[in-house]
Image (tube, rainbow, N blue to C red; front, side, top):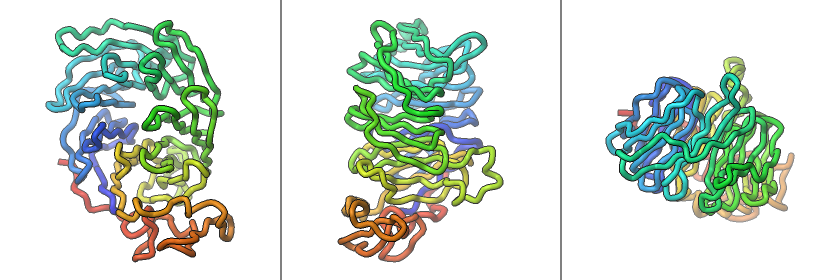
Length: 379
């Protein structure tokens, strides 16, 4: 599982997103750059130039024709993904942060940060098929919490919006009335990331309180919790296995005095049901700020504080391994899980950490993982 190292950013990464088909990847960061990459070989396909400040989040339409971005230059922009041209710009008096197309892409939700005497807000706009009819008129303006809103998701066939924020609370907003109809204080510190499952029935959060939680979309019931020794900045759910991917690490302010292993800069895999770590993949030397699985579950990507993006394609063994045998009743020394059958029988969870070699290496952590990668760089 040799990664492609994508070097197209000069400052920390903020968000990495696959398109619907999984053949394209969009990355954005604090250097104001938005880059487009081919996922099969890691080659840069293009860029979207125009923002003058940090770009916090991006989203793509289902057909990969349009891109939406929200940035600290107090604007959100609509882009043509084929030509890279800016199609429309929304201007605000406050920095924009989270953005999300609705199901069907007829609307877009954009959050703005607290600024001066204004609290955070969620602004909903129509997305016109004909660009000549595109307007900056707001359909809805939802008054948010005092802290920043970090992520947005449309649910219930666009009847509701979910938001996560710095106060550790996830809220449900009624799009018709503009009211907050439900909220849950899921974390003791800010929610850094929130990603939906493929079927929309549950979502996963990542928080600087060192936990990640699996939550029911309707009831906000916490179904599982995944713990780390360092802040968690991002978490994603595999669309094909009961796997959770989390990324984070020691606070960036202290990274210069910390070794990579001590800083917990690995991409870590947990079993979604049993909430036990099954593998980790090293490579970054700073906190991981964003992670994502491809829509078909055959690859994953991580973006970190050092400005590098690492794109991993799983080896064939990943799809044939009996993952439930990695955990459960077969517990070895010091709480490690011993495999009871299959090609890895007798090995413990401690042997699958991402830098092994040879035929006995773990399908996630061995053979090629942990090297610097040999993929093509940006063009």
